[in-house]
Length: 150
Image (cartoon, rainbow, N blue to C red; front, side, top):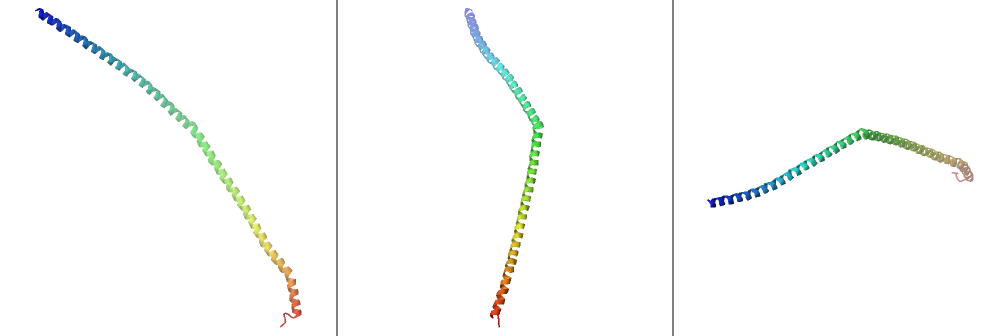
């Protein structure tokens, strides 16, 4: 019986040591699990804060874009319209200036042509007027000298 009691005591000690080892393992694993769960919770909180910050920044960006569209686009449209109007005015002014210069050049050319025609006619008339008496005088003189006699 003593043996059985010793055997039971030995089994009990073995069981207690096994229980202590298991208890230490469970405590270690539960501690790791608790740390992991708290880390996951902290990550979730940080993720939620990051998502909240991102959502806020996106809303701010959307608001800024909307305000830019509402305020800047009409100004840009007005500036563009003014630039187009100014360009149209400049083009019309340049056309008018070019047309005026072209008409002035045409008028100068017409006057030059008229003066050249008048000068050529005048010089021919002058030459005929100057040459006619001499031609007549020479013709009469030569005929009196007998050059044109038959």
